[in-house]
Length: 309
Length: 258
Ligand SMILES: Nc1ncnc2c1ncn2[C@@H]1O[C@H](COP(=O)(O)OP(=O)(O)O)[C@@H](O)[C@H]1O
Ligand SMILES: [Mg+2]
View 1 (cartoon, rainbow over the protein chains, first blue to last red):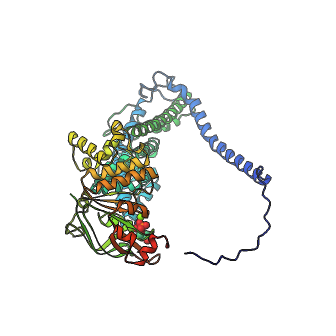
View 2: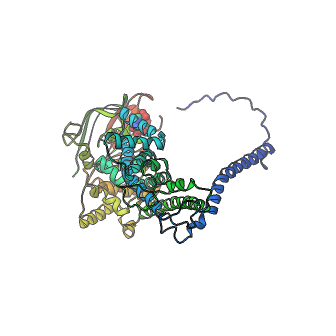
View 3: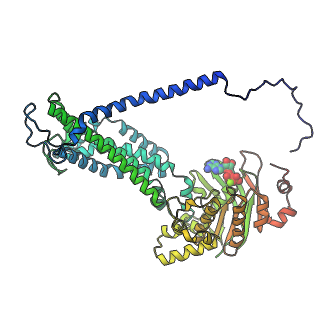
């Protein structure tokens, strides 16, 4: 590949003088402008967040400090205007936790198996159809999911509505969220690890269970907890399928069951009454706190999983 | 322990693309065979057909025969998982399992295949790490993560992991290309020691390395990009480097090419 004849050289053009001291004025101005714009956008995005926290904490935080708030339900409450006692939201917190947990138990296995199918096995048309259905599912309004469960449960099977029905509807909302996040996490696992495992004579399913899933564990947990948070704040399916009750109900399979969002909805009907207002903001505050705790928990689990490495 | 490999009229495809054509060669037991050739000529592709890793890639398929001591690896009754237990592999970039300790990495092949006995596992871990010249460096931190080692140590860890399952053949795809010269030397010495127990096939883009570590050398080439690669010749390393049969080989080795 040696060439003896050198390519004819272009006549040397006069070189522009380049100054090395400092950036040119125009570029500096653009840089400043961009910095200012980015910061302005950031602050603008921050405004609603701070505002929400300010409002909810300002109006609701003192309610959390009331002795009865965590211990009592709303039984014995007088009609709006006559009551002088906030009482508690234990019934709603327990309901939210129970229904969201059942939702998680139903949705997570389905979602993770779907994600494993899509990332590790799915090829061709079947995979495209499954992926498309997950997209559709994530676009379904929560109230429609509730109606669907109602129709299936009552009309098709002729059963009585129970709080667990709300969990079924919520699961329909949680499945696409967790499927998509798990999919992303599985895709992040380098193919080299799978190949390293295959090269040891480990079958594919065992490679997935023992290598791929542990490697993406903390990411999957984070996705599950995000899904949990999303579901814990849902209202429509609870209104339709769990109704609201002022009493504590710990049985997912009978009666009505309160939840924090439905407690808010119930008390909002008489929001002008100061006691109702306190309950609304107290419940909102509790809900935010719950989501916060769940997220911290997720980070902790992720951290612990990493430490074990 | 070590087995011979005979490849007969092997064509290798990625979907409709024929990547390698008409390879016929044999690999002697207890020897090191090096694959050299310009990038993209199909060295890795051929290597990966020797333990049926090629078909892991969607669309990957072969035509022809690969015999391991007269048994056709591509016969319909053969289980690819069992083939990979017999023919181990070390990859270009060190890839220890990030969730596992050094010890668990080495034991992974046995553990994932159901061996639970702690005593056996400890023995295998020590033997394999010694076999990979890594024992002295890691014996005090067996429970630390494998990802915390240096690149060269990680690669020897991967070799230990591969030999822990007692394969007959060890395939290595440019195992030194991501390593510094000192680590490279350590791996080369290791390859030399490994051939007492295993049949070793090593892909390298480094001709000096091929000359240093191998007994036999196979030269692969490519007529043009987009054309399938092919085996030009395979012979004793001495012969290939001093007096090859085909002029293209000589051109490649002397650097007058590619
Ligand atoms: N996963 C793949 N899918 C499709 N084509 C591939 C894939 N891997 C390699 N090839 C093609 O196969 C040919 C041989 O590649 P490879 O075996 O990696 O060459 P080498 O290892 O000699 O550099 C190249 O043309 C390459 O583009
Ligand atoms: Mg290669």
